[in-house]
Image (tube, rainbow, N blue to C red; front, side, top):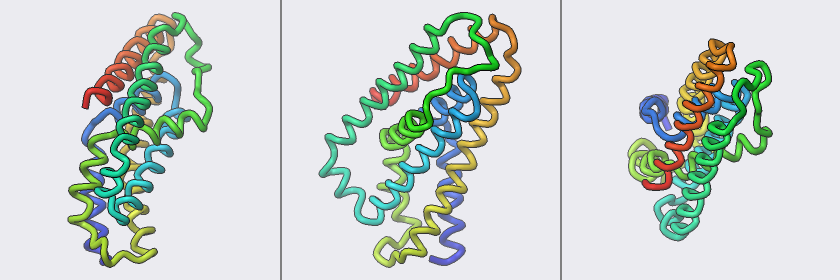
Amino acid sequence: MTFEHYLALFIAMFLVAVIPGPAVFAITSASIARGLKQGVNMTVGLLLADYLFILLAISGLAVVAEVLGSAFVIIKYLCAAYLIWMGISLLRAKPGTSIAEPQVQSTQSAVLSGFLLTLSNPKAIVFYVALFPTFVAIENMTYPDILGIMACATLAFGSVNLGYVYLGSQARKLLTTPRRLTLLNRCAGSVLAASGVTVAVR
């Protein structure tokens, strides 16, 4: 792949990343409600799933998706249920919980939730099945090319998602009273639950 190929792929990935979807709403809401670390860990999971999609696309994602169609459906509903559960947990959080001590998930749990989010994201599936092959000559792939593509994904998807995470964590710092924190939990919980419903019905 040439520099021009990488640049075109990066721009495409960046444009796809900045379009808000369930994953963006989920990581932003999680960062607002539970802090920067939560959002960063979920972003790591999102990237790991993107790497998996890249490898599948190179080896024939359309065939894999057809063979494992039921597995993707199961993953979608698991992710939807998890988002709804996170939303309900925030909605039921005790009023006045200390803003200085957010309830953070374990690293493994947050990474897994980000991973499942991307696997069940229709936008990601459409991109890697329909658009990705137009930027990449899959039949001529080399190992350095694959690493370069993953680097593009890291820079494009990672930078955008971390930007949303940072904005969410900064918004959290403005909420210093129990009343504001309760309102925050309800808003973030509603967004997470709604994102779960969106994932389920798509």
